[in-house]
Image (tube, rainbow, N blue to C red; front, side, top):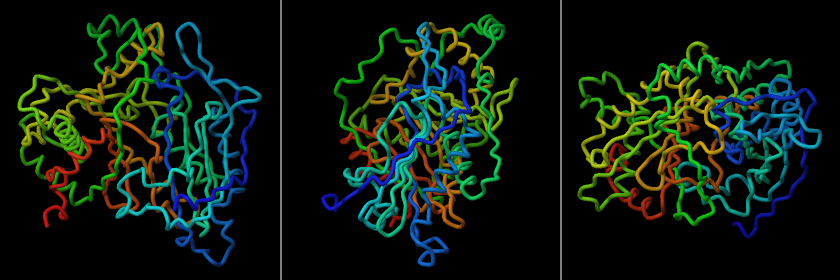
Length: 468
């Protein structure tokens, strides 16, 4: 199929306004590399449209309406007009307006295949590499633009929207909030989005920093972050990895949770579905890596991306805050304990405690610690994701599908990560088009480790399919 794909660029446009001057980013933004993006591809099936065959295909997910609504969006997200400015002294980052840079890059393309040719259904879609490499559904990274949109219309009239947001200005919560606001402006140009850009919420004052240094003897020991004088050489060869998608049904998740909660320790009174699934994935990744280890004295660390919007007090952070408000919850345990096949409940309990321990005081201390470091670009997470550690991010409760309805009654029929996404020892949880509590797990591992994970029948033992 890939040999017969003909994709043509119809238009390329920079959407920009002069309503922006500058914005200083917060400490939590400074430590994110400016080359990092949050990207998803949204697929829209024209046959779900009430006007299918009654209106021209071009009216569906119309390019002119999409770009005009993005112009309106800039009134509420003026920072998207900006470009990065890095302060030479300590690598703090701000956004500033430049005449010939910035704005939203919108590219419109046309491809000669129907959407049905792509493996976007759950039965076929188990490996992100199955999207043909010759089909470009997301824009190539360009640092001059903080938001990239690529609109691809298939021969049948269906559409793919590839949406990339520079991670240094916002987290996944903000990413899906922005898309929700955009789709509402597409449907109603009088809509008034509620968004907060006050980055000072996450920057402690000098007085607060001094107070935290005095009151916290562990101020300089941030378990999830470290200051490294030498920046790792990312050009060195790394392991060959693969990212695959595993759909866990709601029934499967509930059976998994029931098993974990049946063996709770006395100090744990509740486990969420997320905490149990995190424990299950963490354990099976380590079993795939250390399958032949009879005993090991290694320690293994679990990192959980945790939204601080509901956790911070004095000041409180509104849910509409646009920026990076994620902190890593951290748990460390002996690898032998993780490899114990009967330890699901205890691992989930450790995950639960690590999130509880990510208090407002600890978050403010970490923000203060970041401010105190002499070069923000040398701050790195402490994980060893290719060996003993595991990282997880949950996007599945961020309104991915409910916030995707540009055309009335037509939500995305599937949302995926880009085909070239690459990570190791990490998972990202997405909700599904079924809207039934099921979760799509995008999991990245070294190729042989992934093979061992898939061959382990216990990995899907809570699925009815595996029990037949």
